Image 1 (cartoon, rainbow, N blue to C red):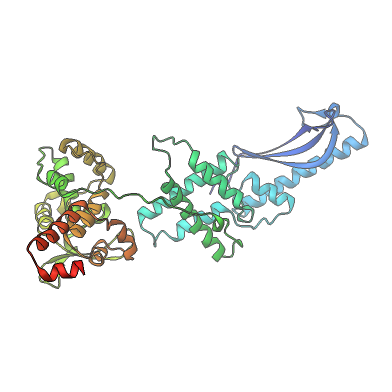
Image 2 (image 1 turned 45 degrees about the horizontal axis):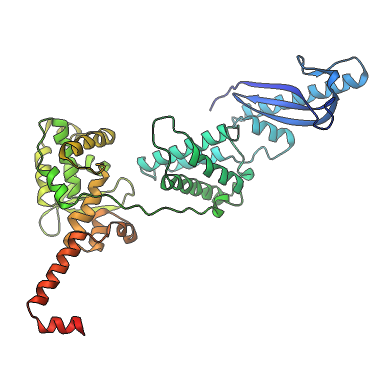
Length: 418
């Protein structure tokens, strides 16, 4: 935390609406690039105001007394600033104003709570989840700066108006890094994370009520993309002379047959592979995201890829099954692979996990309870988003039924017709 700040105090006169010949005196506090004003509730003639010096003109006793009062205000505001410095507390124009007005100077703030949450959860949440919380923090900081013209806010000052304005800000904020605007579900994720942080503040007794309790967090159901059997076969059989594309394709296919997320596949080590209950090779690991256990029998196509890469120099150097490659590069190269293979779908690494859940397992009759265990889901309800009825499976099942009916099975006909 910075020990010194750009700090300034200036007195300004604002004309009254009804009587433009007089005005109200305000003390303007500036910290860094943020400023806030305090009304001194004093009326002064516009003719008596020295704008350059920020005080009243003249030598009368009333003028001297008023200028003396303003210097006392300046002195008290400076004391508030120095007190915050000495106590190594958050220094903002808002906090200085609150101290001057007698509000609780020890009240906890929103940014203090967010920082406390992120620091205490660093050993609990996965790096990916913590990264998402840091992104939410960034949006809160931008909202405070751009819309509320401050760098922080007391938790006790937060209300439903703050929530609705933050929601509107997220829906309309212009991205500066060429990213797409937030969609509904992305926005709701930020609101969901902020709500969890504020709930922590309530449990810590830093404030009484979470204003987000009144906000409806509503996600729009989105169809999960996946590769069908034909598309998976095209990519699987394609050979690339460019090594980086061949590597990315192989790791992607490996995930299609194991269901591993990017981080779990790229961090997989030889020690994570052991003999399972059936005497065959299994993956025994934990999901990086949730730390839930993974126990996955290795299908033949996945085993071929393990044997292809585990003894390469880069893999041995890293102590992993596959050579290391960033998720960003992985997805970039997958788009290139998709174009070369004529796949029109948006090819991302997470599509492999969806493909495992649908095309490889569920559509081949693997029970959803088993698929849930293989994916490392804590609840089967999470897995149900993948349990879509695939058209080819419906067609195959109906073909079997037609075959049985046309075979003249009296018992089957009797059961169906009642």
